[in-house]
Length: 277
Image (cartoon, rainbow, N blue to C red; front, side, top):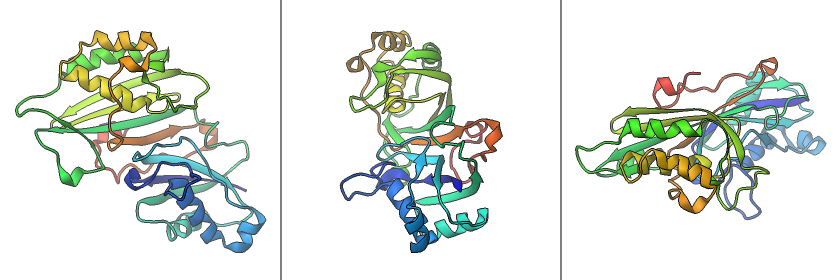
């Protein structure tokens, strides 16, 4: 039986999604340990738990709508999977829903679209209560970003492009060519939000784009600079990688035939317009 899970996590205390060789904390390791504890030793002996995810989030990155599948011989109701696994998970991870799917489904390869949201808190001083939950950008009092300039800069990114200028040196993607569907920028001082939709993303790609947008927003570069960086295919020309704190994997889209539930987004502090389709 193949089970698919929808989960959320607060990523500040994790090394990222993927289990590491070193004994450091990862979302995958915590989830697999919780599933195995719920299934019990007999179920694990028959079929060890190996989870497959839609997207491997990086160190410090959060998830509102991560999707994972695993195969098991253990039979439980959907609600029993949710309640049982959550009983063994730490406070910074939660399962929102669970359901059986056909073996045709893959959390990774069946996905055709991914949505990330980045939340920036901009002020003359940082906010300790937002630590790890939002990226901080210091602005002098009574100043704000040039929103029209950032929106103009976003236009060149829509469509299929080689995003090498926004790719980290550690990226393992087979190709830097990705398709960007939309970039929404929402200004609600002292908050600035980005919603970025694409078929797939390179390692650090969203955070590198955010760094460029912010340079344009404060006037250090004009909106045409984004196009120049994009076509150069040279990472050294782009802005420094922005902090992971404000990055959220918001939603993974799948073909309708699999009937994958939408993420539970009502638990988020993010604006409702960013969380709608």
